[in-house]
Amino acid sequence: MHDVNAVIETDIPARLDRLPWSRFHTLVVAALGITWILDGLEVTLTGSISGALEQSPVLRFSGVEVGLVSTAYLVGAVMGALLFGYLTDLYGRRRLFMVTLGLYLAATAATALSWDFASFALFRALTGAGIGGEYAAINSAIQELIPARFRGRTDLAVNGSFWIGAALGALGAVLFLKPGVLPPDWGWRAAFGIGAVLGLGILLLRRWVPESPRWLMLHNRLDEANAVIGEIEKRIEGHRLPPIKDRIRLTVSSRNSMPNLVLAIVRQYPRRALLGFVLMGTQAFFYNAIFFSYALVLTRFYDVPAPSIGWYILPFALGNFIGPLILGPLFDTIGRKPMIAFTYAISGVLLAGVGYLFREELLGPIALTACWSGIFFFASAAASSAYLTVSESFPLEARALAIAFFYAIGTACGGVAAPYLFAALVGTGERGSVFNGYLFGAALMIGAAIVELLIGIKAERQPLESVARPISSR
View 1 (cartoon, rainbow, N blue to C red):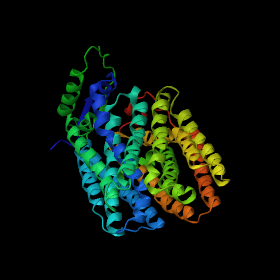
View 2 (cartoon, rainbow, N blue to C red):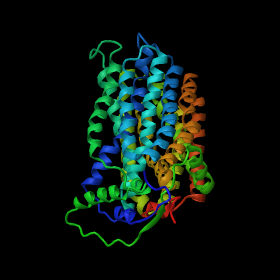
View 3 (cartoon, helix red, strand yellow):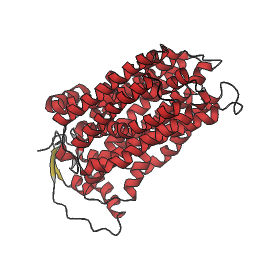
View 4 (cartoon, rainbow, N blue to C red):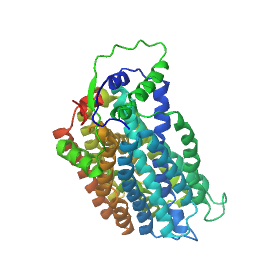
């Protein structure tokens, strides 16, 4: 047992932030960033196979039930984020990102064996719980392992990798749902095997990712933390590391309960709490409203065959992936506040414009897909910046829980109802009703941009301990 009253002094944060980019950081991004790929895969599969689920001789889902299973996935993600976020701060990043990936693997494989609506919804909820838990464990680990000057672009690129998974899901749906490839009712089941196979490979890769030295430091495990950093520094060849200037003093404190940590976040950082809620909630509604309903829009208003939906998702995914890659470095150079406000605002304006063209029947399915690709070039960077904001704005002791908390309340308030709402709007067959939903999403995004301009924080190129001092710092 460690002395809970011990005062320690360490240079661990400074040693992590002085490192140049290395193969170790590439390993971290590859092994941990898979979370977003898996989430993109799962979300896209559900959307791309919605027609197959409706036509399944076993399931025979209605349009509303398709929306409800998407909501079940999001509800599971919310609950998983809260539970595993708290456990991540308590027991460590590494232990929990192995557990959450294991839960995801089991649940997504079980989804392929579903026999009715209730079983499908349950397994989707458990899959979401695994992914939601991953968000907390993974984002906190990446934030704490990546040097400050690379943090913004890395976080946006990792979050943007969601769309690699989306592309895989779209291709899988096209392949497995193609008539004659597999027997009826087997195609959508086989599609869910993609995530299980991909996740199993990454589970092995994660064995090489160490525990966060910052988390070890906080729990007075300095020998382990120094050993981890020493191994990383040994891998840096051909670089002369700058001298260490900053040290930090911490009090190793006893464990805090989840309610106490949440109250500490809200009471000590009320403006950041409001900002995190607004950014997370608006992007959740924006994405879930449009993306979860896109397959329904294509089939209902454009008569696109269900097996062909995946081809329309691919360019959509491309725009979403390229946006954070190209815009990401600007969040580290121009700065967080101007770039976050710009990407949110332009996404809202463009959504309103495209929604109007949709209502007036001026866009065919290909033109509409091209428009969505352009909008989400910016919206993807905006959504990724929301996760970046909440993951670097709060103290080390509650970082994973903060990510989970704002993901949970943002998704619960802005995302859970969106798939059901837009499924109902599409179900009316009225373009005007869908347009009204788009206008609401556009207004939310523009409002979030205004909030960012008013209370956003400067975190670019700053050590995490400078952006938010640890609760235990002295």
